[in-house]
Length: 324
Ligand SMILES: [Zn+2]
Image (spheres, protein in one colour):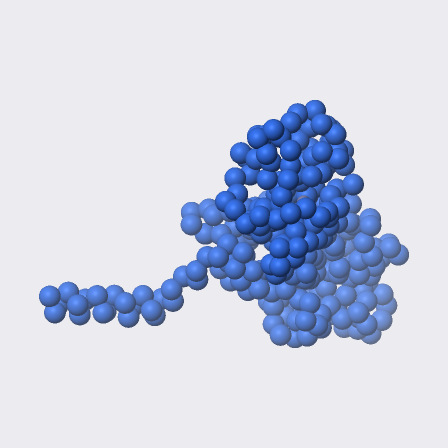
């Protein structure tokens, strides 16, 4: 249970008032009744109450019978799945099912459903933090750093800022096979969580890591470069599961509340997001520019006019005023 299976009903293209239609629903009915109205049910919820259900999209008659699917409602369901109005607050695994449900009604009405973006576009992202070599006594040097910082506003990431919230990592450090690499290169392994050579510890402050590097040429070379502080950055690769956006002082802020997957923590020569890293990951890398672009297209926010443009506009205005 979760996504409600698609079904055949008539489809109407009329004004849609979700709350008004929900209000007409009968109370204390069973799943087969509410499934005629909604796209998703909380598997743990009480299925005889409408509050266990989400994504209403059917017209309800005055006597409380759900009937035709509503085109505008189905389009808005897909919009929410794609992140509109804070996005869908349902598990990732259910998104495709809810999408198929709404899309099938639209197809029945010969309407091309909007594409589902939210999952396909959640490619791998990379953030960069500081890393250092720790040497205690005669012990072999270790590489340590913080891979993720919680509850801290990032610097500007090409038009938006970002906060990763406490607990976003969840149980992924046990579930995922995570490598420590040199420059995200899978041939240059420094450690791995499964073998215990990469230790990941989640704290209130974020995700800390400690690597026991192997006695290999590339690792020893890296340690020398790190001791000289020629290299002192680590990049963390991840995929986001849940995010919300809000505007703080007019600036868009992205809240990451849950990661879908953690990939690797890499000690890197290039700290930013240059083409070289994108090439290593292939096309699936999602840069902050892309994240911002997708956010803007979802919100249909027009880009800010360029500063040069403003200057020209002001000059024009001044000229116009002089002419007057
Ligand atoms: Zn339906």
